[in-house]
Image (cartoon, rainbow, N blue to C red; front, top):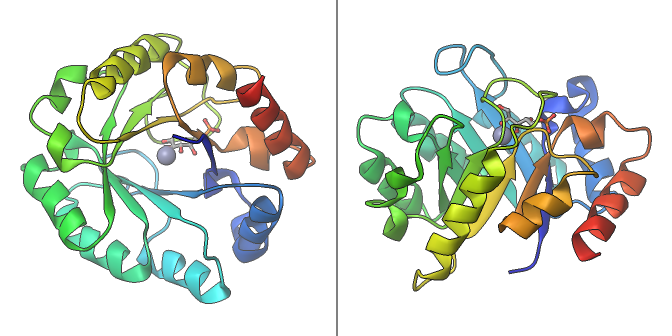
Length: 220
Ligand code: DX5
Ligand code: ZN
């Protein structure tokens, strides 16, 4: 599958969110990564479906990749689907019934993702691979932007890639946390095909140059 670069708006200037999203799209973003945190499942509080709807109303038509770090999760799935999510990903630890939660996402016509924390083993995929369109490997612990990439994540990506290669259906493999120009290539070589980057893009002086440098590294 083609590589997708997904800037995380967690590191955007929230006072000018619409313009910031326009700017990263102009700069070459393929997907917009939308981090939802609840001060319960993770120790941080961000944005909800009203903000997603506002971005759609602003005219954003790129895919929006909603990463739900909330517990419980089920009630919010429909709200994010109705607000215009393209992907919705959930953490299996944040729901009593992951299989059912993934069914809610797909039932709403949205692509479903399962997120593996650094401490979550790959085995969680065993019973859920048929229910998902995306695996999201966290390469930091969820909760904050700007953390340091955990190198062991690459081994996990490799293990999942070999798993997905044996699967009868295409499933995206996304990596999230500490991705920069200088490690995005290693993530691709391990098997990722969707790359979240927050601080590396929104913290840089020129979004276009940073995304182009990432794409060159991917295509090198
Ligand atoms: C962390 C979030 C990430 C975060 C990544 O919980 O899921 O999406 O925005 O930020 P960086 O790229 O700065 O590590
Ligand atoms: Zn995220």
